[in-house]
Length: 192
Image 1: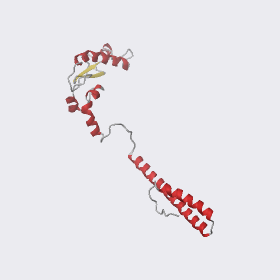
Image 2: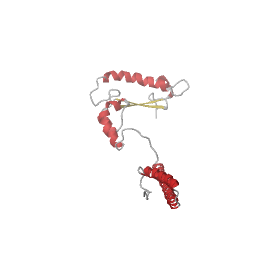
Image 3: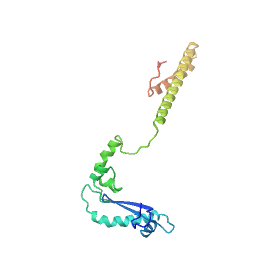
Image 4: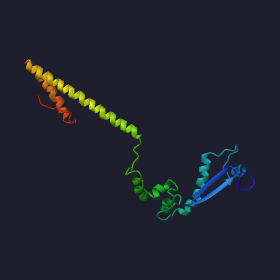
């Protein structure tokens, strides 16, 4: 593509959108340098210089939009109708300007979510749930085994007439069973 000067090949392609109007410029190296887009070494100027150029351009158009009507972003002039047509907001200020209309759209798009809560791969979540369920199953099995062992010890102590030991085992058995009241039933649960 040729530069706007018509003499050289364009090396810089600039697209500016102001109030929904696209303006494209195609510049050769010397024209880009004159426009302030290239530094002395032929590289793009620092981002700060480009941002300053954009800000100075925006400040000239912002005063005309200071009294923007409802449904128009006061920062960039994008209308909500333009957003609906193209699906693109013009600037960060559009989020504030159209917050009332965007809120329900974003909620619907994110299945009711209004705050970012992070992301995890589905297979990792499933594996974690399976591991948690397996851990709970093991804990219940160990607890059930301990309860059965205590019941056997209690029966043996009573048969052998070791009543003090039987009372101690009974108390420990009751403590463990009272902890079961908050746990899902693992079978058993008879009183001593």
